[in-house]
Structures are given as structure tokens and as C-alpha cells.
Image 1 (tube, rainbow, N blue to C red):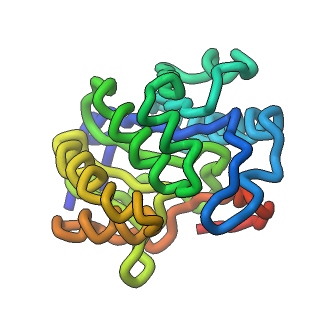
Image 2: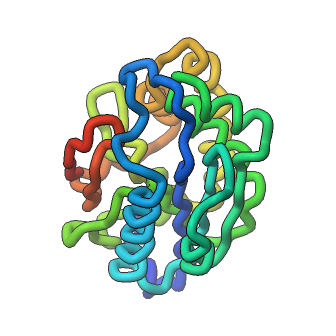
Image 3: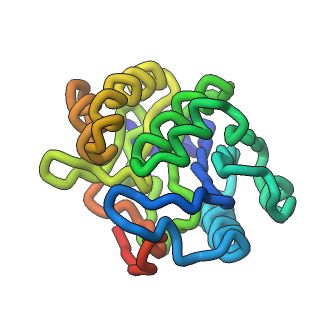
Length: 220
């Protein structure tokens, strides 16, 4: 297991999944999609970016914006290395307006990952969550898929994988779609397909943030 990113000159890429301007429709588990306004969500996502610059300063940051429109403070675009607005895509638009939040994330990632040209290692982090002082690059295996496991599910707020395993990630997301369309969580559906491959379980991700529907603060 080779853990040293810098020593081995491994490029680090961060993909932030973001929905600044969200649909007003209900979620399957909550009548409220977000108690935070688009302006507040921008501030929270800027904190995501700032935390990556702090704890993984040599990284490339890529933002996937999947909101219902692109009306937002351009400071977000100015603070990342690469930006893709996916909200115009008919499949992203449909899924992000649906009541199944995990479906929107999976479709957005499937569309967005096709646009990414990168080398090295990719971290996927959910926008508005941020790295905390417990995040440690040395905990991550640069050769394998890394995630935090909860019984037969995973945290989708932060996980990572080497670029050479991109196809495994894309295939697992695609295979998850039938269950996601039925309302099963992405945490279970995605994990069940990823678990067919070798994975490394991360005990402490080093991430914090506020859950959108009710404002609950959590740390993983």
C-alpha cells in the first residue's frame, strides 16, 4: 500500500458536486430541500474550496454545478481550476428536480466525469461540506477505491479513487440507476456495486458540514 502522494508525485484532483440554485419540489424524505438560500450555499461552497486549498494545497479543483440555472456569484467559478455547468443537460435537469436526491447526484457525476481529463487521484466531495483538521492524506490508499463504510452503505460526501479506476466508478454509478429510480439511497445502491471491487475503508474522513433539509451539523 503506497500512501505518499507527494513523494510519488501523484497529481490530486478534487471534484465538487454542487447545486446552488435548487428546485423547490419536495424530496422523498423531506418536504424541504434546503433551509439555506442560494447565497448561503455559495458561502458554504466557498468554504469547501478554501478547506481543500488549506489541507491539500497542490490540488486541482473541479466544480460540477448542477443547479436549475446558472445565476450565481461568479466568485465560485473564479476560485476553482475547472468549472462545468451541467444543469442544462436534460438528464441532469430531470434527475436534480426529482424527489430522489441520490439520482441527481449519480446522473450528474456520470455526465460530468465524461468531461474530466485528469491524471493521478480523484477525491469527490459534496459541495457545502468542508475538510476539517482530521483530514489526513496519508490515510488514503493511492492505488485503491477509498470510502467510509456504514454496514451495507457508504458516505457519499467524500470518497476517492485513482484515475485508472474511473471506469469502475462510472460502471458502479450506472448499475445503481435502476435502484435510484425506485428511490433507494445512493449510499446503499452505489456501495452495493462498488463492493464488487476491492475497496479501502477510511475510519475518519475528516469532513464536516450542515445537512441541507434541516441544518443538522455532522462530522465524519
